[in-house]
Image (cartoon, rainbow, N blue to C red):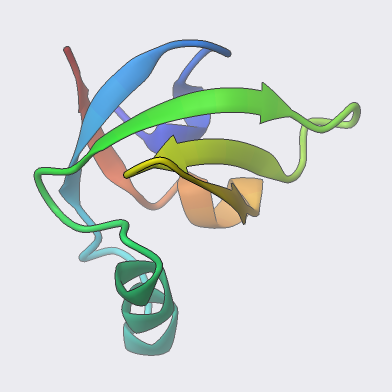
Length: 75
């Protein structure tokens, strides 16, 4: 499953960021989005993009196209 497919309020664990290009992957990892890290979808913007996710008590806005490349496992 991909991060972009989560419903609002749903939590999951990040499994892989390998589909992202290296610069985007590094930026997200610096913000705390690492493999085996829990994330929760807080909300979606009115048009569905960007997504607000909470990871390690920090809110991060991610484009839907980027979230569609992040593999997750729903708990």
